[in-house]
Length: 449
Image 1 (cartoon, rainbow, N blue to C red):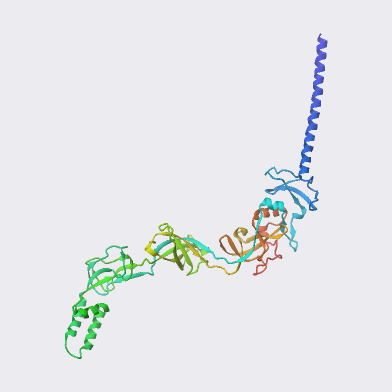
Image 2 (spheres, rainbow, N blue to C red; image 1 turned 90 degrees about the vertical axis):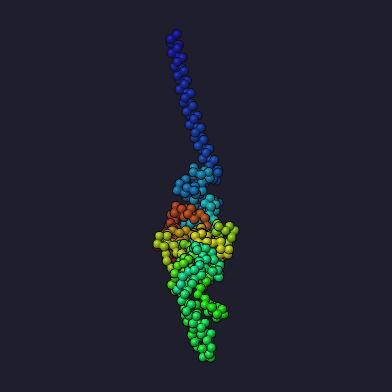
């Protein structure tokens, strides 16, 4: 009984070993078959081409495959990108750079599929005019050129005061104060006495008495009133010469004044100043006389027109700004000192000029570079000199010609692609302009500063 049990156990162990060996063999065969199937599927997807093959579609040698969004990673076989949900793109030997004619590789060719993946968009270099606008915030102030000062023309005292507080509004010709001038009485009585005296030789004396009244500070109208009335006029009513607000009041009822004492300062409101802080980089765009359009939250829907009066010759050292002084028409006196207004100033425009989208210009801090599309998927950098910027367009002073096309988006991805292919970094090796007429120089392509 024991012998039979041992025999049964030995047979079971042998069967288990045989089954395990057979199972491992089947597993290994399945894995190898799966790998082969996957490789076959990838080859079918890409036409069966791997690194080192010749692409029959264009006759070019395939160097490797990569993901355009992660160009640093290289793959020997085609397939899906492990980083993005997109197929890997082949890189050909002929795409490693194009000769610029002097032995320097300053350009790069990008396949249509890669241009689509990188989102490359080009725009033409066009001729046109640029009329820049400068936006600024201005603070309203009194127009100091619309001021009038009322002063005492003779010594006396103020009998009556009609305006008693600053910032009171006054109209042109409105009475401000009554001034009693005792010194006028003697001059007027001398004049009236001479007029009453008979005799043909008194005319020179009458004229002399009239001149003494004028010298005492009386106006011609006051002298004429004395002549018409035949009575002394020791009082004078001071009137506002212009309409506006009283910004300075030195008079008080009953006070004694001396000749020439300023009593009132009146500022008109027909026009106001708007002082705006403009960056010094934009101050050169403004010219005296340029048009200004302003809006204010205090007058919704209203637009106030004006002109640039002056660019004040002083720079704020903290903000590096200049003060641009505008004169705005103020109908209805809606703008008051201290208010803020939003302004758009018409800058000095250009004549006929070459224009490109502002997004096409890459500013490295030392130079300005654009990526020029030279056709058939080829691109190369060109150093340019820029002028004014306005409305999303930039003036090109030199480096380009009308009709050329520049890359407006995807420049940095193209530059990254060029660097990976052994082409010199474009931000440092851009070709310089050949002349002032805008022709790009090929001789300097790839040169260092």
